[in-house]
Image (cartoon, rainbow, N blue to C red; front, side, top):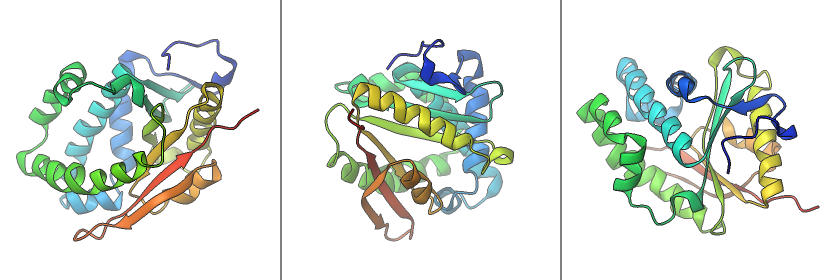
Length: 221
């Protein structure tokens, strides 16, 4: 997946995120996800949650910039999406990925207790369960929607749909399946409207967090 393509006709309303806006996009994503039930469970203290999410989301955006495509709404930074083709990271160790995306910076910024909960409860259990279930339903060349975030003041105004239509059109041109994981009960109906279907779901024990693994197959012409 190329990071160029400003003249691509599919890019109407959407454009690649410039490197100078990686941190701003991460902060936007943190604001957008601060009320998610999963993060409220992991980080009950609002101040800790905000700080943790800012570091985490900035890293996710950096990771997308290195290995995939980060797109934003054209004109103003109202929404951002991160898509990573599985082929771009196939065969790379976690250490290699961490070094390329400056993950150690996120580890330094996140408080030890919060980092421990990320590792043991989110990545080590909730996300792991959903991811294993997801890849069972995808081919080797799938794309993963790693992040979709809309500024809180612009939610419900079509920003997320603009980003999703652009992603779907690109995936159709490439013949790529797209997979995603969500832990917010508001999200599955939104993704279903854009052609995604639930391939697995469960309620994590003991957190009670409900996760959904979703997939979209490319449209054939």
